[in-house]
Image (tube, rainbow, N blue to C red):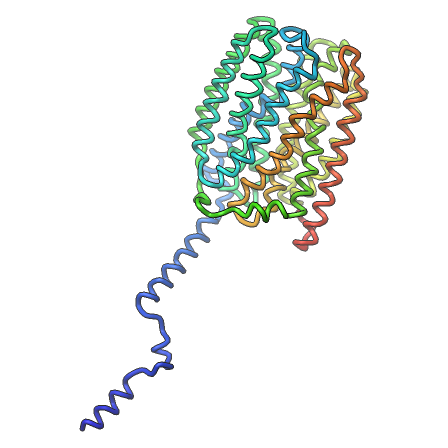
Length: 447
């Protein structure tokens, strides 16, 4: 009896090698289920609605933010012309250009830091803080006295520039929370806000400067900033969880050869791309074109930029952002030479339309190109930010170099034009090389 019972016990007891004994314990099984559930949740979190009410409201908020920030930087040509002929007439154009160039440098250069902080989850801090600083500095600019260069430099160049840098990259990068397939289009719509702002501000300021004076003209612009940025702050919301303490492989990014070649290429393109934006109004004034062309030349340049920052992006979602970026870069470099022939109303209008479209296309697409190098969603802001940071040094020096080459009051226009065309075309060639390397790595032409 005892023996029978023992043998039955041995038969009923699972051996060490039996399948039932190899099965995980209840605690382990629970852990595995949790792990699997976490993976499913993570996968679900990384799905993209490709729009939705909140997605498009966020795009609209980014559009309004860049309407204020990038639009102001791109329309600096109005201030360049006004300062050169009026309140800072004791300074040469290259000195004055440093104010706008510093804005561009901080707007783009700040993108590396704000993009990295965006990836870490500080979107709201950057947007709110940058908006406050930008509006405050604009009101301070309205108090600047004539021929006090440092006041314009500190308020308009430094203060507004830092504010721009804080809001610029997060306002673009947030599109990656809602869009993947339509990401280039969404980013292009956001960036087109800068072109629309740069189209409206010249009309506004050129009419207000002679009527109400510099101070109240700038205050009117500042109140516009205040209203639009309050709206944009209320509209924009993040969707995906932040990277938090997850370490971004910065060394891997810096040693990504195709990405770095693309970044250097972007530097050269931006070194010359904004020369017409800064000097078109002065060019028209010096060639005695009708006042309406002097006033509306930059507006035409920027209003076509609205189309240039949306239509190419729509095409890029079909053909790949790399391919369309190269086309717009090469076209932009070739078109710079047209400025020398823009000595009539018709020629100026044609130049402004075509150049605004092509240059706007490049500016809006280089961000999505940088995003294509990202290995995961948490690298998008850093990749885009690093590219714009490097390009910011081109923004800082390009227009002052062109101003020095211009050599006022002699105005040798062919010098800055040749400089601009050569560096834009060289940068485009580097991006072509980068695309070839990336295409071989990924094994696809659609980049």
